[in-house]
Image (cartoon, rainbow, N blue to C red):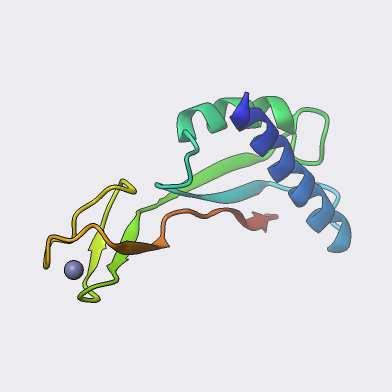
Length: 113
Ligand SMILES: [Zn+2]
């Protein structure tokens, strides 16, 4: 499963960060998931619980933040929200754009209370 390897990767990054910062436990991990990242948040939520087992994250809470897709038209420079790679510019009706936000998948923060 695609999401499981992502979850394991996230846990690995978090464990490395915890080590660097001398943390013995993490209470909360915040993950940012772009709407266009191709990752299903619900699936990721589920596998995160599996990936966290027997790690420093075992008892932590996972918070997911969805980052909406944002595109910039390469013809007229208009910026518009999109949830697809096949959108039409609302201004000039062209399909020539660059995704400027929404493809990210990253650990935003590790919190200890
Ligand atoms: Zn345009």
